[in-house]
Amino acid sequence: MSFNVVVDDVMASPDRYPDASRVIVDDSDYSALTPASSDFVIIATQHRGDHESLRRLLASDLGYIALIASRKRTALVIDYLRDVGFQQSDIDRIRAPAGIEIGARTAEEIALSVISEVVLVRRSRAAPRRRENTADKDSVPPTGEKRNPVTLSTAGQRALRAVKE
Image: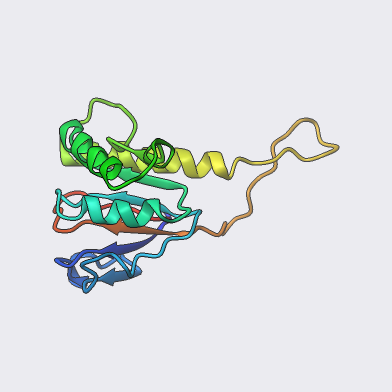
């Protein structure tokens, strides 16, 4: 999907993620994860880091934060974030459950749903502008368009990976 992938997972190994531009394995408190506001972060920790990573990310100006979790798990994490002082406006920045609603059940379907949402958001941010003095044609984005990196935080998730652009 033309993302630069960064995996932040204490259980990761570079051989499991050969296409990743960076694999961070010594970051149990997520301090090495410093996304820019235009990046995408998808958290898929299987409940081993949801709270910590979200606390860190909500303290940043990151524009896209998604959590892959059940509705029950999401509610527990949201309650925790409220308890530690995050306002509703902060919590509203989290897309949870992550992804476009397609009735996904399998890991592959969930991954498709999540990456589809990321692409939708990425493309809506980079919507082509109209050229002046043309017959109402959209301008074409330049080839080799610069893309931000995507960070995948997995904490042991086997079939799904989280993202940061």
